[in-house]
Length: 537
Image (cartoon, rainbow, N blue to C red):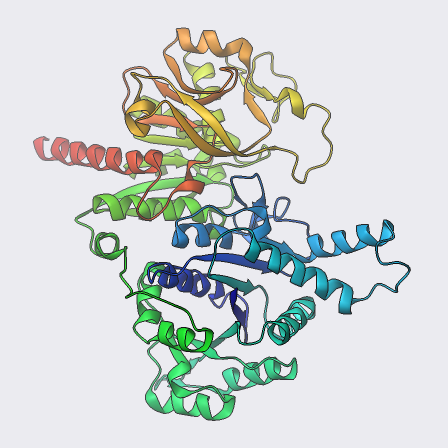
């Protein structure tokens, strides 16, 4: 088994995830069987309970694992589904070691970082590499070289490199800032970062240098001189318009040849499957304005999978999407912001804050024929809005937000009653959804059964389903037993749909989410109709 390890220096948020994902894409398109592994050095067991403001989106895998958003990038760039084993956290490692100590498996030894913690890290890495027929595992180590939290993982990599002679390739991502009016490229941060890595016992084979502009030949020579990395292995990862261009930037600098020569990989000629996709993404034929409404919209990474699903729709249709980020509380205070939109996407979320703004957005979309897509909570608020304003149940609500409502049209799942722990206890992961024929949902998915990912504790209250259906709401997707409502649409409306599941998590560049794709298409038609009406006026 071959391992490509990606570390980062100088500062956090430098782009290790995008670069590691890009390497996965390049290798896959060069005939190499590859998977990805993300190491997160935080003590949390997983990302499930982490604040989106601090950590961005919680991504959900088929097996129900709640993981770092980088796993979403890996799935999109690899076009394959991963499992919880593809995400190692300090919390998982320490929990396993402590449980083994309690069971007496260490036979009275003093349990220490070395060898017990590092051995567990290596065991988990090898578990991923042996799980399926693979050539390479790309490992991204979160954090920055020099962080205390990352030290056990870097030590484990040092040991792995020693044990797997010639099978471990190390790439290090650094920053080359450009200073002053002349935008002089400075190499000192990279020099110091590599020095810190060497002090741990790790010499990089490849430097991936982030910069505003391509590195000059002189700068590459200087970096090579001070880091002992060959000049041809100093790679310039400069700013591009879209992250999906990064694989091309890296591939053109012969990175595959460098990796292949050191690891002895067998590859084919690189053929980028994204050529047409990128052309549409970078040069769309037209544009629409779609509002993404949520609680955390000031941090766009909290909804990164929705943003990427919009990109995937653009790549498929050539219709560019201008995303208008709208805080749901602000929508409640100033609903006129909805008037300029060609489409509305109401996002998932938990807690009462911002809910009334989301309900207002669903009401506006229904009454004005504006294309609407609701996901998870966006599905639930569409039900609440419909019950209030079509059925006339003015106090309709969810028991998540109000225990006083006489019409709890959204209620807690029966199996969630009494659950007190927050982490990993929701209805999680891929579940079968049965789609009814002769519905909008069937037109979009073109099959009776689909598998989609879930993350929720509440559902449509079964006591209100018939009342809602009698007033024109169609539940076009249900679970296998026909008990839980999964997709809703409105009778005789082709541009209003919502799902309890997270369609964004399975969207891929060449296989966009059918729901997001439909929203973009409907937004284009809606915009065209508005323009025609304005011209007639």
